[in-house]
Image 1 (cartoon, rainbow, N blue to C red):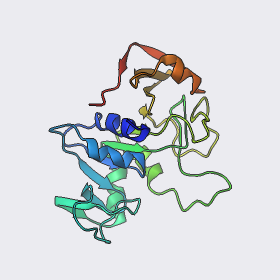
Image 2: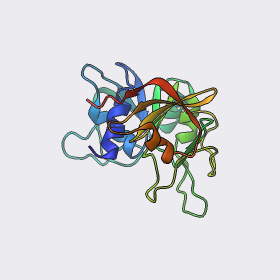
Image 3: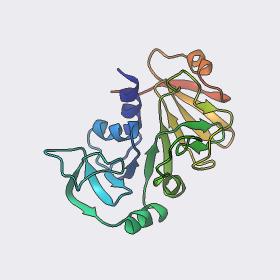
Length: 216
């Protein structure tokens, strides 16, 4: 199983029937393909939709998610302007937001919108989402493409939100963010605690027992 599928499958286990969920660009979007049986969620997109679904049929250029990818809309879904969309987010009506990250740290800080010196098209809705959603999940590969740690003692990039993360789900493990720092709760199959330590700069404690990720 590839890294993105591991992450997306595990993320989907966090959803409960009826949740209003916002999925960020990239890996988070894949979680919609692995919903557990009997679980239906209401997907919200900050560009003005609720009731989104993976593309079903020919693409409609007027139906795209926040990453400009073609999607479908379910019966009973709604389309509205950005003001309404962000009223939903800022009003605390999003149960879970799932976001990618450039960096996270042991204090639950998130940096995912800007790399200094590179073109920045805009921060999108990330800052509003991490402030307004009831639960914030970071879904990302454990290290960067060059093998550098992305889970740090302290973020070095401009922050999207300070102390906002509840759960970090990677292809290696699941960390819960608590007041004292990071707690290693689950390991991917065939991954050890030592494997995680070798690829994580941040300090973390280890739950007893450490569970194995549910990837069914």
